[in-house]
Every structure is written in C-alpha cells, then in structure tokens.
Amino acid sequence: MIIYQKIYEAETHQNITIIRDDLYPFLGGGNKGRKIDSIGKEILTEAYNAVVTTGGIQSNHCRATAVFCAQYKLQCTLVLHGDKDKFLKESGNAKIMRMSGANIIFVDQPKDIGPTMDQAICQYEDIGLKSYYLWGGGHNLQGGKAYIDAVTQLDQQLEIDYLFVACGTGSTQAGIMAGLSKKNMPCKVIGISVARNQKSAQEHVSNFYNQLCEIFSIQRQHETIVLDDYLCGGYEQYNDELKKLSANSICDYGFALDTTYSGKAFLGMQQYVLKHNLQGNILFWHTGGIFNFLA
Ligand SMILES: *Cc1c(COP(=O)(O)O)cnc(C)c1O
Image (cartoon, rainbow, N blue to C red; front, top):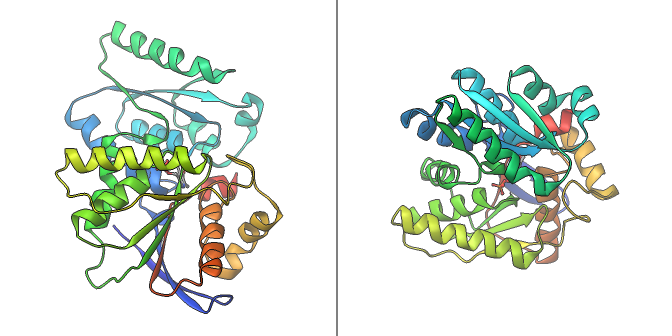
C-alpha cells in the first residue's frame, strides 16, 4: 500500500510529493513495519518459531519485530542497548515492546550484542525451536525486497526527478534504488545519512544495492548518493534548527517528523533543494518515526 500527499513548500515555492510510509498499516507504521511484513513472509513460510534481534530502547525495528512475533505467536528475544530505567518509563516504542511479551535482555556494551544474540539463538535451539537471526534495523534481503516491491506499486503516472529518503542501515534506500532500476525509472535517489559519514554510508548502500540487483536479476542503473551534511553530530543528535522543524511539522505539513530519522532527511532535502536550486519533480519518502516523536 502506498499513500501519497502533496505539500507546498513556501520557501522554495515547490510542490513536493510525500510517500506517507509513516502510515504504513502496521502498529507504529514506518519502514520497519514495511520491512517486517516482508521479512515475516520468510519467517512464516520457513516455519521459524523464534526471532532474535537487536536495537536501542526506542528502536522502531525492535517494536515492529516484537509486534509481529506477538501477533503470530512466535518467541521473540530483543537484545537492547541503552538506559534500562528510561526503557521502563518511556512511552512510544518502549511501551509497545514492554507490552508485547517479548523477552528483553539489556547489554551495557555494543560488543556484547553479538554474543548475547548468539546465546539467545542457542537457547531456543536447545529447546527445539527454529530461530531466525535478524540483523538490527531489519537489514537483510527480505527487508530490502520490501522496498523493491513498494516501488513496483508506485503510481504509473508518477513523475520523479529527485527522491529523498533517510539512510540508516541503507536497506531502504538500496531497495528503492533496486525497485526504480527494475521499473526503469532513472530518477536521482538522494539518501540523507542519519549516522554514518558519506564514504561509509555510500559503501553500505552501494554494496547492498548490488547484492539486491544480483539476487533479484535487476539491471543496475542508479548511482549511489548519500549526503552526510545533515548529521547534526551523529545518530540521535539534533540541533535547534532540526528541533524546530520537528516541532513545527504538525502545523506546517500535517504529519510528524521525528528528530532521529524523517526530520533529518526532510531538513536535508530542504537545504539541498535550496543550495542547488533544484527544479523538477521532488518526492520525499517519509519513513515514519511517529513513536520516536511521541516517546
Ligand atoms: C530505521 C529507520 C530509518 C532508516 O532505514 P534504513 O533502512 O535502516 O536505512 C529511517 N526512518 C525511520 C523512521 C527508521 O526507523
């Protein structure tokens, strides 16, 4: 399902098409809802009965995974990093994770994530369960395929010259690029990095795009562009400008832009459009983050 909205940007006098994946029909919506629906097909058809994954205390991905597992009665272990007291108090994704019945393990150090996930997998195997190891962010082939499939559903009449999207693990951007290549739509895809520097982000996206194209027999035709000019200091960091954009998003556009993902990408788009005086049809793929916004 693809939901469109047109907005008018007063500053640049442009009409911008928004894809409202924040409204994707899954609790909390967003790209992690879309990814888990695709990943979930594999989990169900291959008869896994436990899932182990990881993320922060307000992870959209862990929330989506926890909800999916609860709905389909699968065992779920979430290896979380961050402040446990905050996790127990906060609303948003943390609240949904708490309510999902998932088994939640906290680790202090990033280096403990892998071993703790491995241990959880072993414990499930020991009691005879088939367990699915899910990378943080839902970053796997099925997660990327979710976006190839989404692009396939785009309106045939839609004209796009520039497409902007937030870039974290890069599977959303790579999936969109592969989908556009498959449909032979040569628009420029511009990822706005929310954490990685340009070199590392472009490498990740480009490698994953190549992998998707190879596996799904798609002719590569898109250049990988990820900008790191709007990091605001790094993952989950923001400045006054971004805070203001996020706070005004309801009144200005009628949707919520969080400060970790969609707001960063939107700010990046606005500034890039101004800086390069972009003309043509611009599309912003809103990847969600409503529960981060509400936390
Ligand atoms: C995870 C996330 C992203 C980044 O998606 P990737 O596929 O990891 O690049 C963007 N927006 C929101 C709201 C997210 O939760």
